[in-house]
Length: 114
Image (tube, rainbow, N blue to C red; front, top):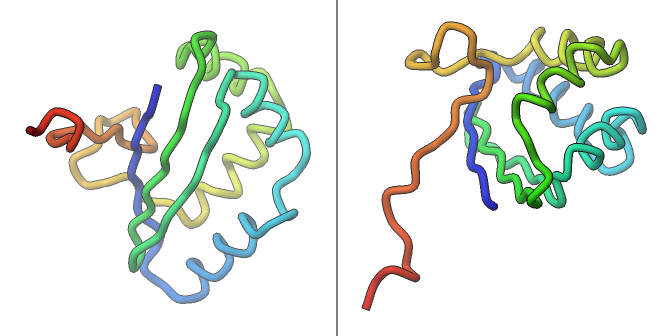
C-alpha cells in the first residue's frame, strides 16, 4: 500500500541543509533503517520543494501504524532520531494536534481515468 505524508522544515537554509545531510545516502543510523524495515515498510522516499517535504512509503500487509508507533516509543534509538528531526521539522498548520507528518488524501489516479 502507498502512503503519502507531508511535513515542513524550518524555513532556514541551515536547517534544510542539515536535514538533507542526515538523510544522505549512507547517513541514516542503522537502527533507524532496521526499525523502518521491521515494520514492513518496503520502500520510503522523501522529496523536498522549498521547505516542504513529501514522504512516499510502500508498505506490506504486515504494516500496522499503531504497532509502529508503539515500537518507536519504546526504542531509545528511534526516540533520539525523532528528537533530532524535531529540531528542524514543523507540522503543517492544519495538522492534528498530536500529528507530526500529515497523511495526504489521494484525489486523482490516472489508473481510474479512461
